[in-house]
Amino acid sequence: MSKVHGALAEFANPAELYHACEKVRDAGYNDWDSHSPFPIHGIEKAMGFAWSRVPWFALVFGLTGAAGGFALQVWISTVASPLVISGKPLLSWPAYVPVTFELGIICTAIGTLGGMCLLNRLPAFYHWLFHSKRFESATDDGFFISIESTDSKWDSAGTSAFLESLGASHVELVEG
Amino acid sequence: MGHRKPLPTAEEVTIPQGHLWTKLPLVLAVTGVLAIAAGWFIADDDHSRNYAWLTGFMYAGSVALGCLFFVIVQHASNAGWSVVVRRVAECAGMALPVLLLLFIPLYLGRMDIWSHWMDAHHAAGDPIIEGKAAFLNEGFWTIRAAVYFIIWSGLGFFFWKTSVSQDSIADPEAARSVTKKMNTMAYPAIVLFGLSTTFAAFDWMMSLDPHWFSTMFGVWFFAGCCVSGFAFLGVNLLLMKKAGLLPQVNEEHLHDVGKFVYAFTIFWAYISFSQFFLIWYANIPEETTFFHLRMGENNPWQSIGMLLMIAHFGIPFLLAMPRTVKRNPSALLAVCTYLLVLHFFDLAYTILPNLFLGKHMVPTSTIPASAVCFAIGMFAIVWAVTAFMHTRSALIPVKDPRLSESMAFTNF
Image: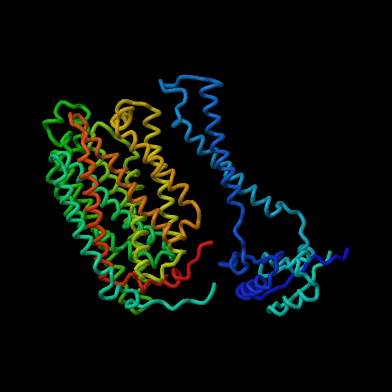
């Protein structure tokens, strides 16, 4: 019941959060995140994000969708239900372009959204940060950094002290 | 985020005396004149020379028009990111008045080029052409051509002159009102630009075959203008950077220019394919004549059509998709140059087959050869004017109120 899930540090404004992120990044933490009510330009650089793997989902799904859409039409009009339409050959590829395009697009969209959810482990109905009353202001006027206890560099006292040294106005260990 | 960089002064972003770029206008102008002369003498007869000239003229014109459109769009959207690259495009807009000189041979050869409808002898007894006579007649055509040149030269001059005059305004409030003035002018400019390029495409290219029509023809030409104009802007920026100019333009700006080129390459494919697709699917005789002239087993244009589909869309679509390509100067330079070359094939595919419309002509290699020479020559003239204008003012609108925003700009 009183397991420590991680540490939460609050900062006064986006600029302090930004510079604190740079220091957490440089300290070598991996399992951590920053929270702000609005997007902060360049925060992804301050946090040292690696490139997202979502584009690979988009590429594979998109190519599969386009190829599948094209193959479906070829199969229908040459094998399943061959019909001569306005004197054109059975395999009239220009006619397949719109559906091929549309299926490519919708599969890309599904792959991108699904891949993003999968990698972010969404939907998540519970998160340990919700145990912190203070964290509620993250959607209003609070700027936070959270470090998870699963991080290899985690050490309850040491991590709290580190976050305080970054100029946090308040640091708490979130239990629950 | 991060600290603000100091803003450059006009002197810092002016091409220094004796710099390589100051010699460029002369080199390009000489190249242009030589290439045009070569094209002139390569052509077998007046008829094919006229068509080749028209191809070259539309090629060079679309490049300058694309740059003008870039400037207009930046002002209309009040874009902050593009301030450091905008002057380079503004200078290309100043090539538009010079295009009038290159139009003179077309005007003199009008009775040959557009003979199918302009020549009363040809048109007599043709009910389709007689039905279009209220629009397709020599007098109205000449007036319209004059209006296009007034619009293009006027807009090109206005956006260049107003922006350059802002460079010497010290008072930030006065500078802001100049920016506001260009912003206000940009909205009617979009309408004027859209109408003038659409009708110019109708008048000079679509009417080569007056029986045929396509409502997508204007937007097809517009798409080509954007691809080639933005690619031309990219080539200028990248070569300037390689020559040590414009250190303020960084990979973030190049990335956005690359995105513009990439987006309009897709737009071009969308419009070109839609034009083909609707005509092919409906299969109505008065529309299919266009592709009848360009497709078929033994038709040499068939392979150019396939080339356009694969090389003007497929290859750049896949190659320029990765972010790293648009952020790498050498790769982006290659993509822009490549698209400028492919744009020629697009125009040649539309214009040159009309040479064989109702005329018993033997296809010869001298026709495309002289078209290539004219295109290179007139492109060099447009570039020479652009490069000359680069030497006449600062390369960045230094008093634009959004300059610091542009210099701090980053992509996500």
